[in-house]
Length: 408
Image 1 (spheres, helix red, strand yellow):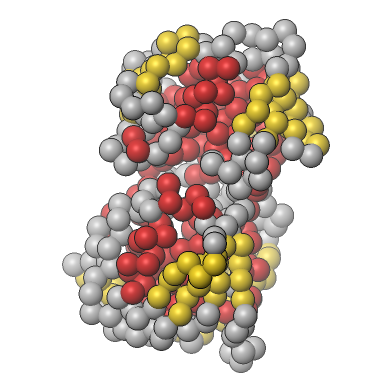
Image 2 (image 1 turned 135 degrees about the horizontal axis):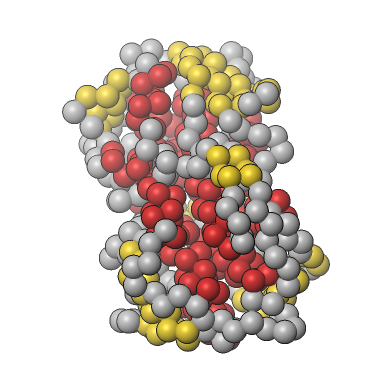
């Protein structure tokens, strides 16, 4: 797919897709309620559609495809409900670790068997978690995947409660806070003190809930605004404050000249006509916001801003090795992305247009993070553009609202 912008001036009203992170949590909690819940504005993302489909089927095999959140959440859900299910997915999904969560569920009394390699899907739920008359204490690492923690927290009130002790520094903390916030909306209280989160035995209460638009998806519009000569874009359905940690993109993009105005039912983002000089000694820690790393790396590279990025540990085990993918694709544009100190990666080199296509590595965020580069060169070819179906199916359609042109 070839992508180009006839004008670097952008103006549009974008009906952003809903957050799949909120959608998938709300769907799981609704399934644990004792009465139907009215969930509005559910995400159209493939991950969410897969979650809905599997929650509504009695098939003994749940194929989550490439949906990591769905895999982790449904593993815990099946164990809590005593459902005999085999969970599997794409070859890449079956190389993403699940062992920490499975061992935690087994320590709570579930019986789970790995079908092939220990620690990885596919795996089979043989017996569910028995009800605990007193909340057990469970230790789990915080530096592998916050989705393990969220999965355990959401089932906790249905198995007699749980005290979750996080034994290592917690990555993606806002996602855990989102989980607890949604649990609270559906009637479940919790207490987070230090590295222990306690959830008592209590029932969920069926409620209605309107899913917020996706701040991760919004990040690509911020990047386009940063690379434009002028931008006046309304992003519909975003809130302030938000459960979503990726709302931090509004702050991250300020040094690149993008301003944010919160109004009813969304935000206006604009490119400053006379921005301050770009920072020369700038570092962002993405521990809490790993899904923004690609967006910021590409935007900073295109503007020749020497950004340093840390907190990227989880990027190695996403849909692809996102660090390696960034290194390979940015190199096509003359930009180096290398580890300069343990855990710290830096951008260097002078950006220039490339006549090679951008590979997406079966990763939706690679496609969307690199799309704004079409504002910096005449025509940009992106391979496998359909990967955006995973989180933002309408992305290319919405891009045409800012007069982006797409050619086969």
